Length: 100
Image (cartoon, rainbow, N blue to C red; front, side, top):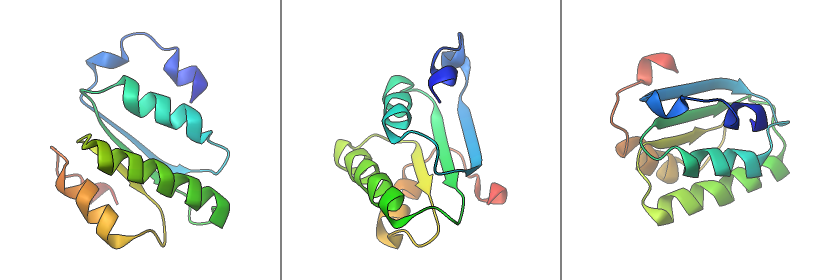
């Protein structure tokens, strides 16, 4: 994610999807990325085998996203809080359910 943050012209993208993300993705880098590209719809779908500790870190980021009322951000992982997932899904511009 650190290398992706260094790329030029990402602000021209309207939609960015990442699937099957491993636990090795740094949550801090993910947070910076989400905050930096405010006009881009971003979806992160994590692997099914991430640890409980990593899920807790994702939950903290999800709470921050929901509380800040940032729209067009979606973080998905197996076993997450369905209510929070629905809130993030309701804030999307694009209907991307076909990708899941």
